[in-house]
Image (cartoon, rainbow, N blue to C red; front, side, top):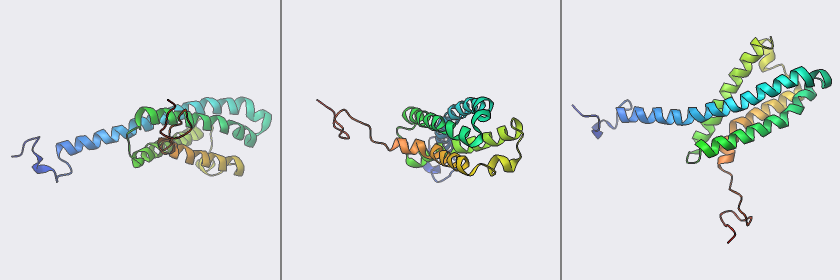
Length: 169
């Protein structure tokens, strides 16, 4: 009977070391995805509340949503930059995209639940029936939200000389 450290079971996908490796990789992706989602969702929840209570009555739905968009994009970039620096430095592009994809899935689920429960919208109103201009901007921002960890992980660091990889002496 092979022991735990014996490598004769390497072809078995359910062997102990391989299962632990999968669990480690899953947590390595899920933890930053959840943090990324929670940061952006928390900021969006606060800004959305301010938008609905104060800005929407003054300017209307389209303008209120478009005024909120630059703030949310700033939050997305800052959160993705923090996640990338903290968790995704030595990861592959597929893992960076997985982090953004999982966070986006969580964001869509949360948006759906908030729309149904707090705002009293129908499922169709939550997902599809949006203003053509601000709805398009919203879906583009979701695309940026999904890809931002990957985009920032592939960015060259800015140096003091302006030449990538060369620092001033």
